[in-house]
Image 1: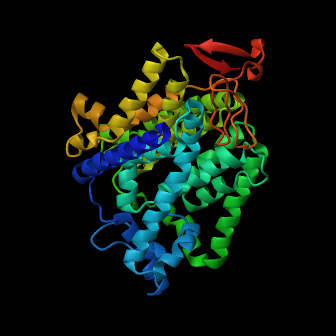
Image 2: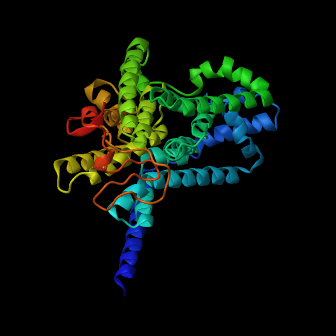
Amino acid sequence: MAQGARRTLGQVVAVVVLAGAVTAFLSVAAVRHGFFDLKVYYGALDFWAHDGGEIYDFLKAGTQYGFTYPPFAALVMLPMAYLPWPAAITVSVVITVLASTVVIWWLVDPIARRCRWTRWFALAVALCLIAAFEPMRETVNFGQVNMLLLFLVALDLLRLLPAGSRWAGVGVGLATAIKLTPGIFIVYLLVTGRWRAAFTAMGAATAATLLAGGLLPDASREFWTEAIWNTDRVGELAFVSNQSLRGMVARLDPVHPSTVAWLALVLATLAFWAWRSRAAVAAGDEATGLALTGAAMCLVSPVTWVHHLVWLLPALILLVDNGLAAPARSRRRRLLLAAALVGYAFLSSRIVWAWEKDFTGVDGFLGSNTYVWISLALLLVLPIRGGAAPTGGGPADRGGPSGSTVQAGGVAQLAEPDRLAPAGQRHRVGGLLTVR
């Protein structure tokens, strides 16, 4: 058997073994939510389309949960009301799997190219590992839309924006019209000076919202005047699944959570995020800008359920990328790869649920907010790859195996000397090259 055939066979066996191990892990660790959130959407749409009710008046039987997304999301999801329930589940799972595969490919493929890995093997291993990732498990089991939103944003930031497309910003705008929290990426475009993309995003979000308003005037009126302010529809802020700064503050005093303390933390987080995002874009590192903004969004959103933390995936993958880009056997490589491993392990472990019933005391404060600490750590220490330039989307590497590559996905790789900023504009902080 030829060496190439033996290598392929070994990789196939490795993927099968890994997939089997992940399946066994999921059979023990994964919680079956019965597509709870999808049932809420499906019930609200059915109530609206077939029973003549208002979509925001619907509450799932025995719960306080109703449809909480903007009217444009209802318009996008409306075809689901005409599908049988098993078909709705199938569509939800397929969309999540496809969106996840594309996003992970954009982030992992440049690493595989630079490291000379077999590209299908790198993608298969990454997808197996991500299937075990708790936020991804929760996204699938709840029937959530998180990965579709991440796909729309990544399409803009990793593909269209580096290529200079006039359509850059549309994905961010549509994601914002479907769910409000991705609107932080419009702010990201503004604070990093990409005015055309920012205004395109605002235009797309406004157009989608006006379209929904024209077609669904009553639902739009109810959402923007009443439903958007009704926080009881989304659950308790102190619930351990809320891994945002707001949830952390609420767990300190569930009865009277301090709004002042929360706002102070949010402002400090946004200021630091804006500074780091500008540095990432100045270095041409759009992927890190995406990752930093995803982490900041998880922190500053009033409600960040565990399934929302799929927005941390780009940061974890980039930790691996930066670790592999460091010199072999270097301390930097060991630290970055260890940080990625620890972050991934905790975010796959369900550790916060150990404090679901009692999050009092020091151990409760530290343990029940584990995912908050990880989001903060990624925002604080995720390296910015200096000297990388945005790319126009060409498929080929732009350097040799030991040189620089800047890939089509916008993921910054090892910098070429002639792409570094002038000496007076770059400096090192803690061993990381940054650009003033």
